[in-house]
Image (cartoon, rainbow, N blue to C red; front, side):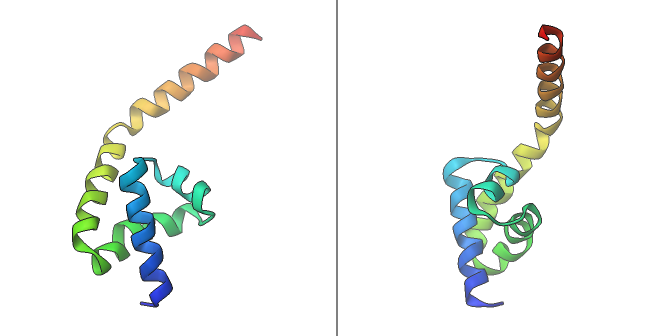
Length: 85
């Protein structure tokens, strides 16, 4: 693995731990694609920094567990805004 990819993985992992944002938000913040961010955090990071990868896995697991709630909330807001128009 190239050195710049190792640094990117660690940087993304630390950013996720600090902010707690979703993969999509991290991708927008950093300018990388969502696929790159996800692959760096789920596959490559554990090869570089196992301890950080464990923290990242916990955060991503939480995001996955509340994913259906976020989708439902977004749909609710969408319909509320359409009623007002």
